[in-house]
Length: 285
Image: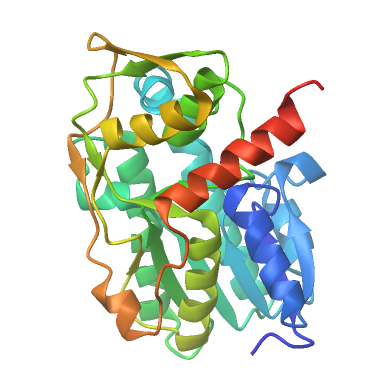
């Protein structure tokens, strides 16, 4: 499907985007990368039209990263741009004659009361996809993926942007690992490589319903902490006064499996790869 095709990846410099670009190029695609770090601000419609010119397939991954603290304190900074990105990219892709469009939603939509603003931003995007399907039934084909809690070697390790596993590794390398909450929260953690592969499968199969991309396994934050602390010999403390997100988020990935998706990266292997990557790229020798 991808050989010699013009494929656009928004959010190409992000954790999932970098893995996806590598996989698409390995499949012979001509990949155009779009990211704020490359000067592409999707708030502007003309910029979206520019990057969609001549494109046949769009993987729309671009978004605003937000941890529980950020989305609690600055929800508008998260919600408003997300809706703008989705609105602009969908219409620009349609007007540019794009054939296939993948929208990246989130596990948050399955339990919106625990992460209200991220969930509703993504749910709005899903409704926009639905609206386009209804109004333009013979036009651009659209599909939706809902990644679980994603981690991977290309995540942003800066404190204000770091997600759960990334933040824990960043703290643990100092020898002191402070954990927000009591560690009992349960998550479905999935490696960015597996998500990228899942996106490719979903784009190829083009299902009409949203597809969950997770590991299908439950991990408590405490279990993750223990793996990281052991690897980095860190001393662990828990701060129960800090926000920690919802108590439980685990995905049913059976629909993805029916399409041929099977996660390949174990949590232990994935964390070890992240630790090694962090040491190589962030620690002075």
